[in-house]
Length: 255
Ligand code: CO8
Image 1 (cartoon, rainbow, N blue to C red):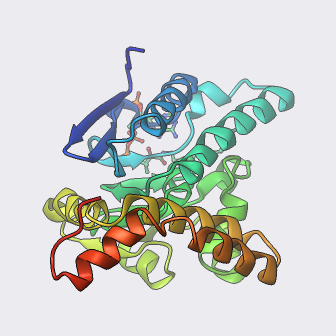
Image 2 (cartoon, rainbow, N blue to C red):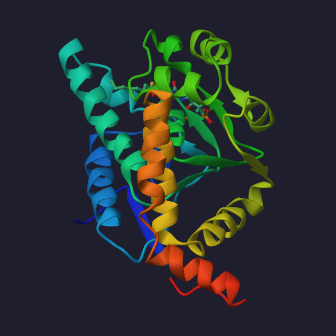
């Protein structure tokens, strides 16, 4: 598939996806979701990729869903648009490799929802965050009402969701909405450094730790412990044996 909005690249085992429609501040439209759906399937089918970084071109990460595309939608069409977006963003959580959002600028509405769908977030000190849907008389439709309180807490989530206030990176860090803030020029280097750290670990372990942690959060506690126990056995005899032997033999593991 030829992409018109996505710019994918690969450096070693690290995939970098740049969302590139800067003339509309990378606003998310149907073309984006079709391309993203296809791209995530291609990453999922590529065993050489160990980490994915998502970023935006220009002054925005993503300034929201495309208001021009949504303005004349009927309620039924809006529900379909929401369902498609949720399904595509859920594929990020289901991907067998960690996904880092490298937030270069505005992450508003659907853009903040995309960032929250990633496994963790680092941001330029110039980045801005918010769920301004209420300014438009709307509510979030890509799971912002659900991910935001789970990543922060109920009161911080409702504060942002009801006021539509746009916050800076330092405030987002304080709310634990993001994990790290960098100088603007250091953002991609830091994203690549973190991705490199992860890419050097046992690939099966990284995949399992993401899967078990994400799945367990939605489960009853002791059922989630059981899930961990079941998957704890998976790397033994394979990559786990190699990792432990390498430690004992004082060498680097070969995965
Ligand atoms: N949709 C479409 N176009 C956009 C969007 C957007 N979300 N954001 C910016 N643009 C366009 C502008 O219209 C403008 O286009 P043009 O040059 O043709 O006039 C261009 O991008 C540049 O934008 P500005 O001139 O406004 O740039 P500024 O630097 O002055 O302002 C802001 C930057 C503050 C980010 C401003 O653009 C803004 O407020 N944007 C809208 C932010 C917003 O409200 N986002 C939430 C959208 S709603 C949403 O995301 C709901 C998600 C769930 C949907 C569920 C499915 C139904």
